[in-house]
Each structure stands twice: as C-alpha cells, then as structure tokens.
Length: 92
Image (cartoon, rainbow, N blue to C red; front, side):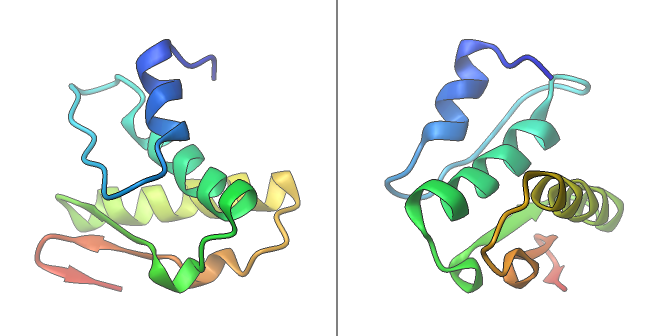
C-alpha cells in the first residue's frame, strides 16, 4: 500500500504515545501495523513495551493478524509476537 504523507509521518513517529484517528477505509490498520514494525526494526523497542488498542475485538484481532503477516514477510528478527493488542475494555 502506498502511504500518504500523514500516514508516513505516523509510521515514523517515535517519541511518546500516538493516537491515530481517521475514517473507515483510510488505512488506519496498515499505518499502525507498519508503525509498530518500524519501532521494532529501526528503534529496537522492546516488543513487550508496545500496546496497540482499538475499539472492537474483531479489529484488534485483524490488526494483530496483519501485523504478524507483515513481520513474517519482512523477516523481522525481533520477537514481534510479544506486542500486545486489545480493546479499551481488555487486552489479549
């Protein structure tokens, strides 16, 4: 997926937490999964220190699945399965 400048800025964001707000079909999941992959690969952030939160269980599962596929395809060496995904009501 080709990212626009706002999405690229979100992917490269490093210092502090980030909240991504956008409408349906705007690429939020792709942007967030690439951001987390970037944190692991380029900044060596401990995967256990990353929490990704969304609104529904289905969205959290979809994001986790996409993230794991992205990491596998990229050959990421970090233990990316330690990244935590969940909802505002619970994590898994």
